[in-house]
Length: 148
Image (cartoon, rainbow, N blue to C red; front, side, top):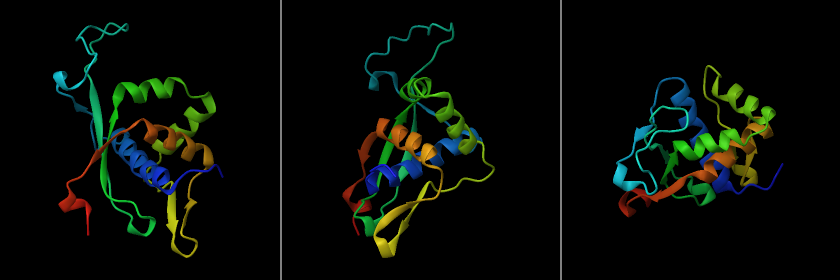
């Protein structure tokens, strides 16, 4: 298993769940306020359709056993799509198979006796999901919510 930190695996779990929810119609991309996203001129994409900046809000709950505090992530749609274009066909198929499942599954789970994560899904799915999680913007939560 590649060396992923507990934080990376925990974030990847929640990012994969958020993307699964989008695919299954339970969540949507949030259109960003245009002044909040630099570099967007409001022009038309090369495909001929207008594409406004949007993000997927992702809440990552605390996992105190792994010393991970609660925080929020923001996955920008344009960065996600660019990442998908860079995947190999095998990686893309693995992600699509995961997202197409009827029920979401955790990518990895915390194994308390060993104080480490154990993979619950194939390594290629986890690797792609960790890569997507690394694209996310990290937004801290208010101290009142994030502390015990």
